[in-house]
Length: 325
Ligand code: HEM
Ligand SMILES: *[C@@H]1O[C@H](CO)[C@@H](O)[C@H](O)[C@H]1NC(C)=O
Ligand SMILES: *[C@@H]1O[C@H](CO)[C@@H](O)[C@H](O)[C@H]1NC(C)=O
Ligand SMILES: *[C@@H]1O[C@H](CO)[C@@H](O)[C@H](O)[C@H]1NC(C)=O
Ligand SMILES: *[C@@H]1O[C@H](CO)[C@@H](O)[C@H](O)[C@H]1NC(C)=O
Ligand SMILES: CC(=O)N[C@H]1CO[C@H](CO)[C@@H](O)[C@@H]1O
Image (cartoon, rainbow, N blue to C red):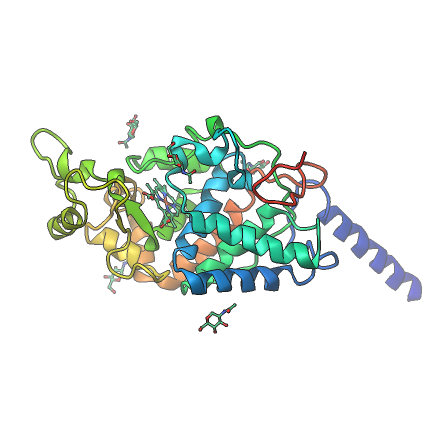
């Protein structure tokens, strides 16, 4: 009996050890080394959110861009004095500074409690979940154990992020490269229930769609007018508008209802409804917030596994914006 229990214990330790090894993320990765990490990040995110709502969309998008370019390794956080880091790429799509600031602030708190232990990549993954919850979206457990990347180059961005003009097969191909299914892709696109887009990202749909029809005929005509009001021709390039015109500060399934109503801001949004291959999923998510929330949580966990560095790969950065030398 005692012997059996001892064996069982030994096996559990072995299994835990394998879990902590190369390649695998686990939810309790810091249970011994930094048990309060999630509470510390949550508090820092909440403090930052109380200062500005932009924290929410900025952090969520930062996580997505980080994972799609060289994996979820906080490479997007790095600053370069030469302006050639990942975040300097033209494709960086103007990541809002508040996302970077959220992770930097959370990292400072975490370093205070458990120095040199928790990666910036994990802090970003936790913060991305926390902002979804703060906006009213689903909660889910975050897998941990990522290490921070040693490379951040603007030249690695091109071709790895989706563009607003993409059609369904282009979207599916790019997400499939990151182990994400069409359903994952559609659910993650629901992040556009929050945040802003600069007018330049969709102005072609309002003013220069084709020679016969300057306005994209597939846009709901009232919505097109609303967009033209917010984004007049040749508007100041710093002007941005809400991507969800109905509930821009709530994480909900209204994004999908908008798509059904012809109110998809980008071609890449609209095509999810107009392409018969993805339309049933959009209708399902538009009808059922629990189906959307469940699919979003699943897809976020899968996004968080993309090309992660674990074990002895990469490093634990001290300052998220600087690669350890
Ligand atoms: C499916 C393909 C996608 C395309 C083509 C796309 C494209 C874009 C573009 C062009 C913008 C506007 C940026 C600007 O002008 O400032 C934007 C904003 C945003 N995207 Fe996406 N995106 C996609 C998927 C995602 C995913 C998977 C997420 C996260 C899970 C995401 C989260 C966001 C957020 C939160 C914003 C608002 C950012 C802010 O307000 O600061 N997007 N996206
Ligand atoms: C943020 O504001 C809310 C509402 O006022 C408050 O309950 C919460 O404690 C604040 N969070 C922090 C970390 O200060
Ligand atoms: C999507 O765009 C690509 C590249 O322009 C094109 O080759 C493909 O035929 C398009 N697919 C659909 C379904 O329109
Ligand atoms: C969504 O709900 C409407 C009305 O309840 C129903 O007619 C439609 O079939 C539903 N669509 C899906 C995809 O569940
Ligand atoms: C996709 O999943 C497979 C099998 O789990 C894994 O070997 C591969 O590294 C993953 N690819 C990415 C980009 O995460
Ligand atoms: C946040 C950030 O680094 N933005 C940059 C994105 O790329 C443009 C064009 O290369 C730069 O002007 C921005 O400063």
